[in-house]
Image (cartoon, rainbow over all chains, first blue to last red; front, side, top):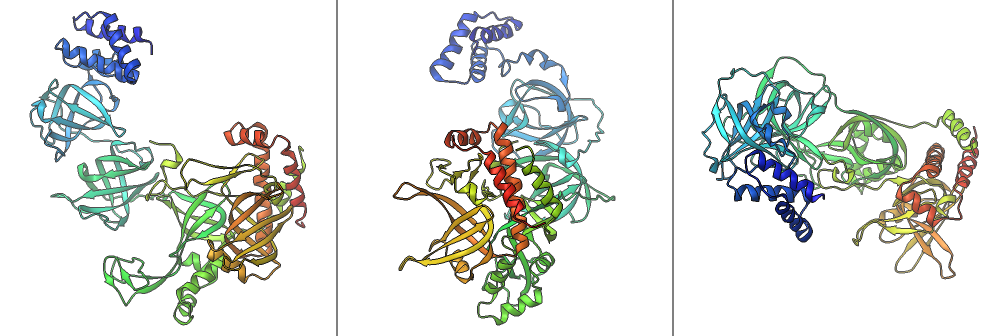
Length: 414
Length: 199
């Protein structure tokens, strides 16, 4: 770190506000933090700036020392703000959510015509309570970042004034493939509804548009309603979160309007080829729960995790496994028709084996394993959650042209 | 967003299955370097191929020419699987009960597809032996064998070609570990293997 550069930067920032500080004093503070305490240089610069601001009784003067603090008074478009900046924005409150802690007075989403951002008003800030649907001018708020998501912090140095701006705001939607963490608006079709994995969860599933699909979740809250599978919605200002590298939409903050149109959802259609290198337990013939809309696989004792013992189950075929091309291994799930065509064992034949063979369902598993393991196949299907749901599949055929091409490649250039 | 593939695994956690590499017997036989990726007891072990790729698992198709049951209390099977370039030594012990049952049922000779993990051993007289611990072995047809030869030839040529220019750590390490091997010989291995398939 160039201490004298950073020190000059800090001292310049203070002299703009009419306070002269000796750069050598700043430099020694920086040196101490970095050399003795192993603090990151950028963090050191920030903490020295804040320490001095406190000492001279100035509002904390900016983060990161990027020198942007001088522009804090000019209104910015929400889409242009970046973490670490002090900003003034003008926007409309489009969502308020219940504060997660008593230290927070209000939290929600504020938007202008360029986009939306999450905000938090600290209880200590004494900011006026803002109302959904009204416009406010927020001066000298800080943008910070939590888990990669930008958020606007309204603190005691921030001024919040109701503004005269026009009340109408039509947010632009973006293709799902272009969504990034933060706040996003999409026009999408609900294509799947998933089993609730949590009692506080109202609904979760998958929405998609022409460019891709994304998981959504709605938590139980007064006034929240489920979305209908197969319907298209305009979803404005949903929270876009990231978990394990995958994005998801939290719709609790969103304004949702049903749309009459239809969307040809891109299922992320993929074709993969390779050899089947593993057939997982739970493949073969399985029993499913007969309760309307459940369809879960039952245990050997006909036990459904939700509907308990179900003696009137129905049979189904599936193969869960791994398809490997030597570079990458893909998790695949073959549905009944695909299993039948690949193994040559129909559901009826499998049922017959399961009920009459001494090994029962295991015998079906073993026969199917012997029929598919180590075989080269090509699968067409949709990728969902790192697993390919296979719609059609066929055995690869030996191609003499490929053989000739490889012979030429191996024989040439040696 | 994280771009590290190890962070973007399945929902249950960042697990990523090791791909099954394609390698001819003639190349696998030359392996002399095995290492563990990480300090953990459960970290995967890899055999480094002379063409500069690590493999924790391999997929091979060939002819099971011999199998032998060994041991009294700890029964295990040994087998020889022949490809156009040489012989793979495979084994299945009591830790692979399914593989053992599969291999017990197969009558030699037969085309078999094997998924397994390569391990490097040194015999008391100092010779090296690479043996494949079988995860699964099934009887397949000749077409699958031919497809495997094409697949393996293509993968081998890819590796030989990137070895010339590649600077990945595994390729650099392969050059260090196998200074006397000219990877061009594996181009010939691939050619000879392909030439054994009748057009």
